[in-house]
Image (tube, rainbow, N blue to C red; front, side, top):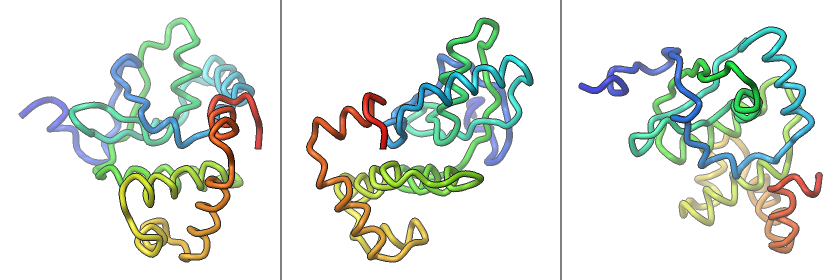
Length: 166
């Protein structure tokens, strides 16, 4: 049994920054101002809450905590972060990104739209299945899909890079 296989769900462990996989960052908008604020908070208070990861294809894939990770990477002395492990598949991870980012803040509709788009267009879920997974109504899923699909590809990419704001 490897060290990662022995890592229990919801257990918090320290993980090195270079071992973290950010493949699902694409479902989050780039927010440089908030990342700078997070860096100030990390410098002043340290890490208050763990990031959330899952083990996927033998990688530590970030589900929640992208701002903390980006801020830590800009700072000297931050070689690792505490992470809580979730046991989820790829679709469950996308749903967790949505659910965890609803806590304590107003949802960003474009981020919701990217997650819905990934579940329906990339993973092949029906709109009803995506709605059930996210705890929403089918009409909500349909509106989020329409919101993203009406944007031209250039606008989507500029939003993703933080060159445009919602």
